[in-house]
Length: 318
Image 1 (cartoon, rainbow, N blue to C red):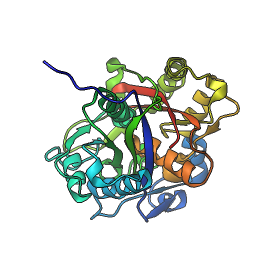
Image 2 (image 1 turned 45 degrees about the vertical axis):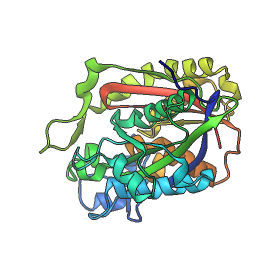
Image 3 (image 1 turned 180 degrees about the horizontal axis):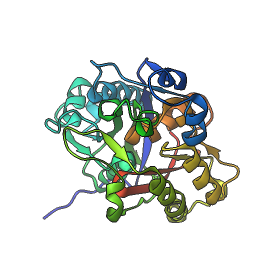
Image 4 (image 1 turned 90 degrees about the vertical axis):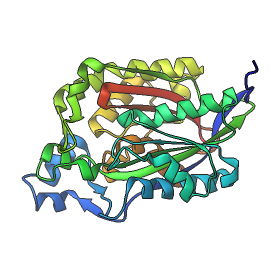
């Protein structure tokens, strides 16, 4: 029996992002429910968010972000042989998003599967992509986080509708002589899984905010530090920290405990809201697009959310 031999390392070759055109401000929400701009900003740090149209699907947004990442990588559709989509908000579970995304991007007969690790989904998918390239199971992998949370939110419930939003972010992962994606540190706290969820197919997203906040601000910074240690990168050497954009207070609390005062902290939640599996690649692509990060910069990414799943790794900017 023979085994595949892959590349010595794997790295991100290109990034892409997509946001719907419809901007919903805090004042817009305050005209519909009992809330205010001050209340929302003080609790979650959001000023505005993007909401997809009724005819705009998870697949549509994934295609838009994936196409940009493919163009940025310099590769063609023919170079990609695996597509992974991280999402927890498809309208239906079958067919999966990844095969349809691949077809619309002209990627012929790739491996294609979806990952549901909620807000940690992109980190899980990125790790799987890197492993596939190093093992020789794939040459190049398109990884996408895409969510349409607006379809699963009760727009009369201010504990959720002010937080969640829609969008997509993507990365192309390919071979490299040196590692550009560090070892993943991942896990879950299934005993807390009931804190965030959707009860059944006729229900909306619900979460118990205070326990989630306490868990995120106490349990996750050791994961971030271990990801740095496994990658051989000190927190003081990071160019940026890009965690899941769950809540600005959570982002800032973890960042303080990380001990990386020089690192640029992603605060994409202020204008993008919480986009679950899309939030990390969306924030990272926007930071690169604004020229805030340069090729080769080391970035710590950290996903966490429903499950309660979490994953972190250090990557290099393409």
